[in-house]
Image 1: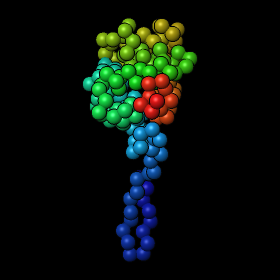
Image 2: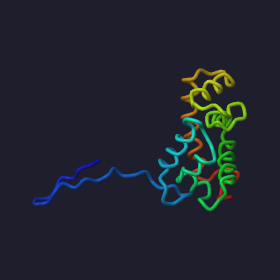
Image 3: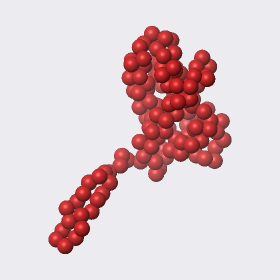
Image 4: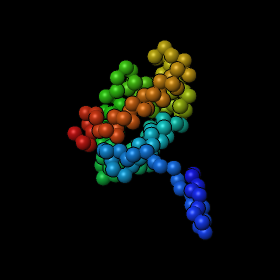
Length: 151
């Protein structure tokens, strides 16, 4: 929060810090909102249709609330699969979308599984999944993936 110094006889004015630019793909949503939604979806039980439905920014970039949740899920999976260098496989595990980890109720358990499958330690998996989330965010906000609503 920034406080502007008042001119003589005025009260100090509090201003919020400037926000990042809105996404070109989903006007009105800040990429930070989409990032927060992605980070939320990997925590706890991971991805579920119900949890996706509660992620308003992510739902918007995937096509909006008028789309059936199955279509939104398919588009998210398409964006994940469009990533390179095993990022897609890693994110499917971390989000709990991989059949081998469905039912895993913690991010730690899914990271352990990813580490075993990919030959990495949990810390390395955490670093890689954070970078993969950023790549996924870019795909989503630009609409640059096969089943994008912009296609």
